[in-house]
Length: 307
Length: 123
Image 1: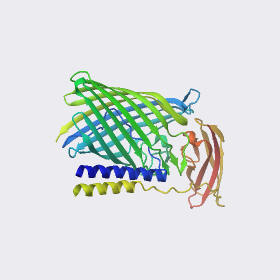
Image 2: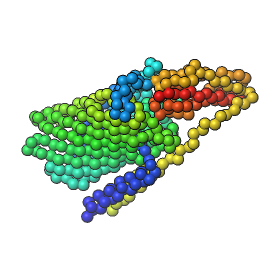
Image 3: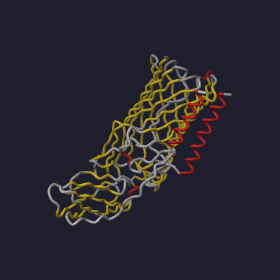
Image 4: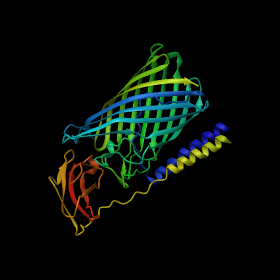
């Protein structure tokens, strides 16, 4: 009864927020970088999981809708390197709380005029609560939602004036995060597949009156253990972003649809799970013209502690 | 009971979060110069394409003592540099079109003057 009530409340809460979102035509924020098979599913009670990761992304190619445009290079390149940290704690067998923190070590853009612009700083944090709707030894369905929060309302500046939006390490605004996690194990085949859907929406305007578009990530993971210590994964990831808004004006050159295939290899060493992920974009369809990711890679280290 | 209280609190936070900040209108007004400080703007290029940049200079007539320059642009582009010269660097395709650059100049006696110039950015 209690379980049903909680599920009902979470569902209604999510629905309510979704309705509000549609009503006010809210758009949203720069998504927190998502890496590998990281903050997924439920943890056992009193288990603390620490996930540290590093991600590097490089972009030097423009697309106009789904056409590659070799002749456009407003920016010669754009890159970022990012260090992220996710702390998860199993409050009970049904609830897990996550805290995501991240820092852009550098965000760099080189313009066609040869000028290099660079910033760094804290990304938004995310605190989220996950609830296990259904869990057996071979199947799990978990939902969750959370609050994305900025560490500062002040935007990053270059020479005393606000840096452009793409160089901002944080959205400098609050937002919402919604999660769905489905997992199916096939222990006899040492095979597991799971799906993560993450929506980042309901972002508020920041002090520049800029609001990023909603972002929806859907990732299907296919995981196969090849030995006691090694496992391989294949991610098929979809990212869909709606347009950003500035003073209620939809911004050109924002929003789009991306598909990635990301092979991942995991190695378990004395309780530490080490992973490398490489993102290969396979389909890019953006609004107007945008510079899009050429490649990205991540290193992930995960460790569970039983408290 | 505890769970219910937590859920109500949680939903309240999510609802509060959905309250949007009402954006202020963009101020594109032409401010006239005061008689004490006149600001004349010029740029090495008034039409550029994305990826290029324009150097904008504010020349001041009148005013006394040291002058302070405050620059702003009516788009999300970058303005680099300080003093009486800045470099306008358009950031992205959303700023294609007119970019109005303003310079507010204040002298040591508090007299103010404003100049503005429009740079056209072609995609």
